[in-house]
Length: 569
Image (cartoon, rainbow, N blue to C red; front, top):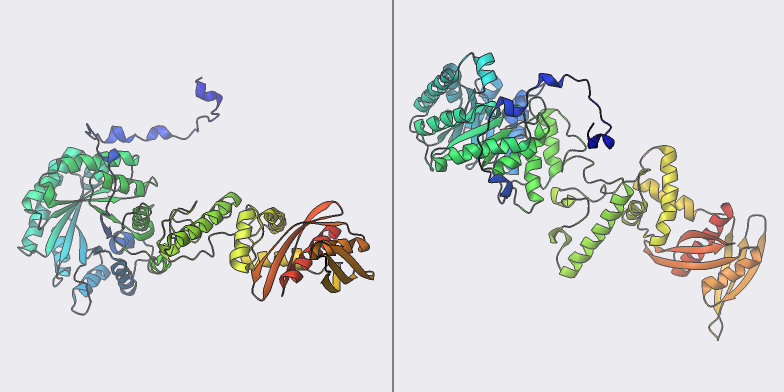
């Protein structure tokens, strides 16, 4: 029994966890000092989308040529400059798509480089080079699995055997490319994160030398977390070790390709960049085998939220998402960071109140600074970025259900119906809304909120002034004269007071209502004025509201509303 047992009642699960080995028993990372924990990301790495190859091979229904072209055009439009376009030796569709890009009418931009993927087999390498003939530039990406389990179980080779496979493939690639500077090389030791670090260094350094990499024609060494096995800090240690020890470092682009088996692909990529990675492969919205590749959209907008230019334009996130969903035939989750339908939406009352106040403060700060709201520094609670920056509107930022509070309800009434409830009135209507949503179990739309407000405060009740007028005598006192319908009878009433409403309250005593007006506010609305009144009616404080053509008529109606609501209790 340990002290933690007092506060932690968890007990053994009974699951056979003993079958699995921790990462430190599978691969040793010789890190003596770490620089990445103190580093900062101050510029975006080179993003390389692999949706058309890695993402495509994970689809139940791989993309046809039309969907591939639409996705490629999206990637170009967003601003990606190196795009893995296919595995041309694996399928006729991929081969034909690469040939299409090589054609004169394909419209390949001058600053976009296609990447093609190949295994380390002579026939597949030959097919790959056949696919890129005529391309003005290309990267040929060679991969070989290198970790002990893959070497022993899949390849049936030891380290020397894998080294021979890599060398023979590299020699063939060099012969096929010749001296053409427009073809560069990339190498991925697949399952890097499970491979002995010294073996990875040997393979990468040998290829850097053999391919005679230089700063003008660098080689890309891409280090995949093919299957996540550890916390992201371990991957960062592995990347930093390679970064510190690579030969001819200025001639190497150090790249990473995290997967998301443990749900930490984004964290792995970010820590890898801190550790020295210059290039990140992934997919839009995290598509890919099993749990997917790292999500390039989240990575880019994470940088954006830190004030770093992501170097890609995601200003119309819904258009990007729609294209990805169409081409992948997979939906993007409504809670997906930055792009999901609900990510800029608050249902919780405390969140709504904070967001509403934050948006109001943001607008005031922008006005006082003399800059448009879209250019003012952003500091709104619960919203890491301005939804408008990615093409979202504010209409769905706050939505109402039974968990919502007064701030969210008031925000929607103000922004969607033009009704700006005084702060002291908001809890009163919020209780009405909560009761309605508790009963329905559903969300209340802005239109439904407005209808509920009108039914609660603006509907006709038992007390109705049919005709009324206000007169002021020479002393400044006010006299309120009215004909009042009270359902079962009609009475002519008159009252006096220091103002029109106190005179009206005095007149109401003749109908049996003792009314004290505690607070009244109003504001313009389309076609007139909205007024809100808190009154003590026969000893009970009640809120009422009125919307009329004139301010005085709206205020009178607000008092009538309060009287009717008190009578209905």
